[in-house]
Length: 125
Image 1 (cartoon, rainbow, N blue to C red):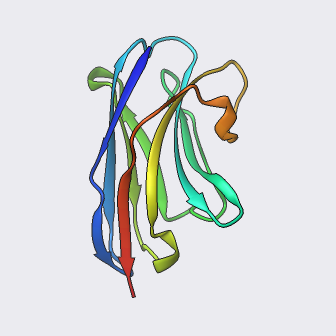
Image 2 (image 1 turned 90 degrees about the vertical axis):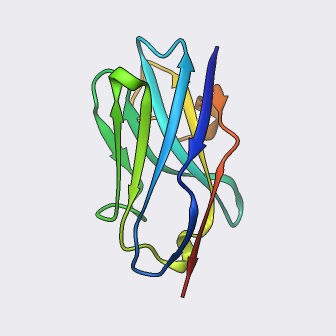
């Protein structure tokens, strides 16, 4: 079992930055991947970024590449999403998720077994 708790959401003006955190507890060793998702029109949840828990290998969606960065601190079991140059269309609830997988990258929500409650990000124009 893995428990995930997100934090760091809030209100920011367009062009600003936020850093989301996701604290993980439970079994997060081995072939775990951590991901960030957000709702999108026509989709239940849209992939944003993922990271290999022990490798640190990252993968980002094209829509956020160059603006968002995913990272983790293995010692504190925390994964981060640094969001820069935010746009109003980035407004969403951001969910942290954990997947036990051997493939890579993992961009489908169905690949993730554990989910946090989400944190709201609002970008004003």
